[in-house]
Length: 316
Image 1 (cartoon, rainbow, N blue to C red):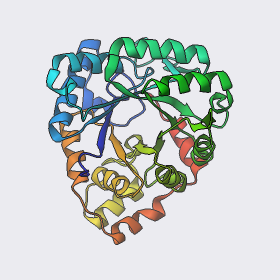
Image 2: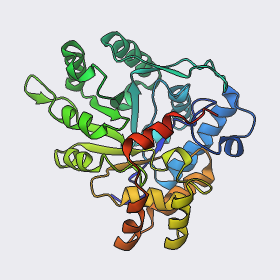
Image 3: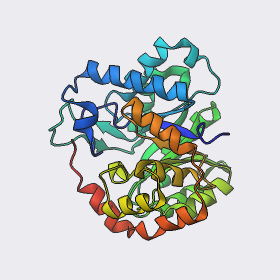
């Protein structure tokens, strides 16, 4: 698989008017209406597909991301019929932002059996048989999902029907959660076979556990490779200096460093413009040497500090 084919497109920043990614005013402008965002999502999906991106990632909490993706697939029968298409979504959070940038709360977490059944039905109602990968959204040590026997059995039932079951992780204990998930079985069979985790030069702590997952045959998907804009031009000052020394734009350097990890199966781009898609493709064509990768190592933060900064980011 080429590195371009290992790029995916995440719809977290395209499916709702507000998100924590920097630069949204310049990228999206003032019109964040449903129809404006639907048009923008289709434009970016077209650009990504033309560039060779085949893994498309949504979630119930990404506003209307599943709706936008479904309408785009309906308009592109060539895409919908392509066996290389991978449509992934996530359950476990509800969008409650009311399509407002200034909402007091944008999403609510619920990892209950009832939430799983309700949200899977809604996802299937929109994406139908295109859904290939269904993931528990943002599992942390506090989440009961990995120890809820009824829920695990319900997930296993969907796996037996051919749906790939995965999870995403967030927070400073991603490796701990992933290692616990690696040991989860139902009727003697491993339940999960995919993980989506944050990894980037500022927060690489999950790397060893992600390597273990890849060795176990899991699909490893990297999210937030640009650290929600902190690793884009104009972001983290130390990272900007490193990119200047390496001679590669910061966003491309960050994406390329994720793609350089031998355990990374897919690296999601959070592009919201066709130009950002093109930059991601350029990153996938980079071949970083050991010196460039080593230059990034001093950028790593303590996980608790990184996630504290992320939690403090404003929705915009």
